[in-house]
Amino acid sequence: MKPLVRDFFICFGNIFRKPKAAVYPKEKIIIPDNSRGIPRLKLDLDTLEVICNGCGECEKNCPQQCISIKTIIENKKEFLDEFYIDLSKCIFCGNCVEHCPINAIEMTYRYQLADSNKQAFKFEKLDLIKQADYSIRDFWSR
Ligand code: SF4
Ligand code: SF4
Image 1 (cartoon, protein in one colour):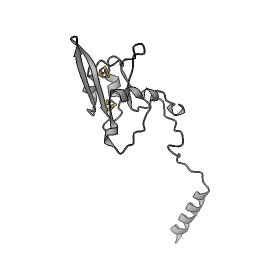
Image 2 (cartoon, protein in one colour):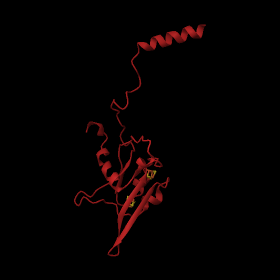
Image 3 (cartoon, helix red, strand yellow):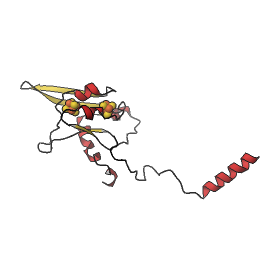
Image 4 (cartoon, protein in one colour):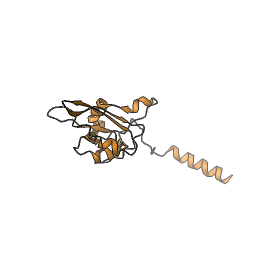
């Protein structure tokens, strides 16, 4: 009987307490500095072309093998054709960024990825470029 009475008073008391959980996603969440979200491919601001040259270092060093790169050869020179990341496997470790020799990829602050469609996690080159909007910590205010 005692625990029942105790539980009753706990429940009764909770009616008058303020909720502790955030009303996500309606409530803005402060994302800590240096958080690692979806990687993005950076653009050269002069040419508006991707900086990535398809060297494959990030692909080799990704512990999840979720990066896949295709290159093309033009005039005996190799260029990046496609760049895929399967974000359903990505663990946001940042290894791809650490190993890029020309600083062509960076982590953004975007962390919301829930989707029932597995295909939605397969990001190609254009999707990865578009993540530029999430490069700032306070992207919610945009
Ligand atoms: S963050 Fe880590 S797991 Fe994700 S693509 Fe880069 S290296 Fe791979
Ligand atoms: S390591 Fe950098 S330059 Fe090389 S393929 Fe990856 S993102 Fe592109």
